[in-house]
Image 1 (cartoon, rainbow, N blue to C red):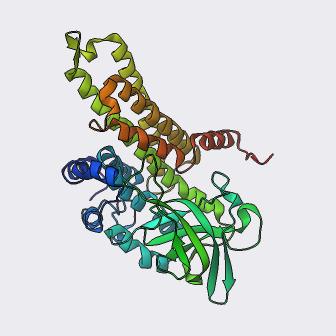
Image 2: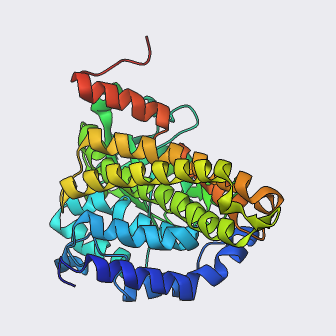
Image 3: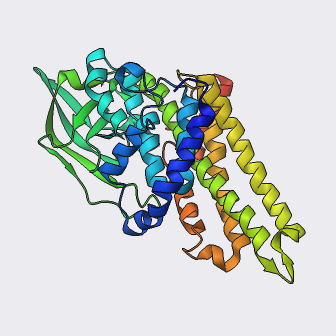
Length: 383
């Protein structure tokens, strides 16, 4: 597709999402199961998993905003499908695209773009969540291998993904100076997974702990050497815009459902939309969604095929995360008792909204990043 085919991508994504993935969204949530390999391959065949990756590795070489448009359309109706488009285009594979060697790109990217394999990122640990530089998982050099020991917590797609980009300590330097990233294939001896978490939302997006017990991987699997933590989190801004878009999708879906409902539902002989109190709540929803979209689009437009501005990214993510929680809550209020049932799908949207606000750096952490960027300084949270 040409770079001016933004509207075409969005329209195709909306059609496929409605026809193929919307009908299974509720069952994926109820049964806590991800979409199948066949369904993921279909996303790959249609080009949705490679929109933001270079053409020479099977992608489309599109600007980031084109991929975000597809993520939003899938995310509105089926978060597990949206997650696959999100993870492929804005997840750890972007580290390979931007920082990997030519051999690593040739080796790993085509399978991600086709949907044949998935790649998850492993950052958080039991004692290192928002304070990522406190991580303890280590990879020690041993001749032609690195030996990894430690554990990771809250890993989306943990146990399901075929590959894991593991942020860990590659030397004994303290803080960020010792941190790099190394790729570990599922099935490697010593790699194991905890039981799947039973989360409030994200029920079609598996989450599990990962354990490394003398896991040996070749030195060729080091994507970012020690001291590259800053570069890694520069790329992580792409993931945060993907997260922003999933929150935007949730908020937009709740708004769309509510706009339809208030024109159909009657109370005291007139449609709900005729009540001024409902109009005020609807206006608040529209304002919140539109503000989040404008901030997301500014960050995406500024990124093009490169990296988004950190300040613009944090502003967008913080706003969208909080918008999704607010808008889904207002939608449930307007729907009354119906909003509290599973039938209308709003409680599912509300549950998922809270998950995206935690993943990828909470709104509180985004606020700290915003002030850091505005003042041009870093704040030590340990003091």
